[in-house]
Length: 228
Image (cartoon, rainbow, N blue to C red; front, side):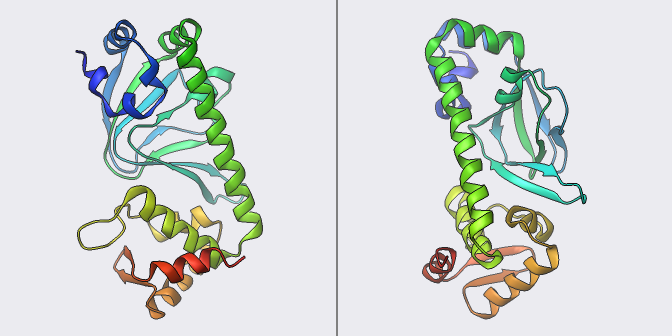
């Protein structure tokens, strides 16, 4: 079997609908490379020329606001694809993708992906479902930003980080965001984020050790996130 047949990206993405012949073709044309923490996969307004498969590591999708603030829209984990929407719409990327830790990424050219899209109905349907799912997440995020206050959004985000990315042996959240990045996720100033984290720490709801954050009282944090 080709390595693409065994890859985690295929198991959890629209690539699972590709047959053996298509996977062999993809393996022949893909490019695999390492992206170091802090490096971009692609940047806002860049023309993406294919799809990026996230094999290992986590990246952030963000948009730069008019005041220069980096607003994080989504965190992307292994098994997901990037660049599908802009590739199909033939528009520049609307967001930047930057590695939050060292990553292993594969790139598949647009010509090959569009060949699968036009020749495999199940694959094209799965791609569209993924894009629809991303739109739903965007809608949910927009509603949360509009209806919840900053503390509620912070509580919700901390729970999301633990549920989605897990925690280390010491109980700290596996994904370590800077205070600036966390503030960008909840749409507030870095100073406000630091102050709220300190309040949660003093209340015994979370534990702060340097940059690490550990959830101590999950039930209180959940009630806080739902208080609106």
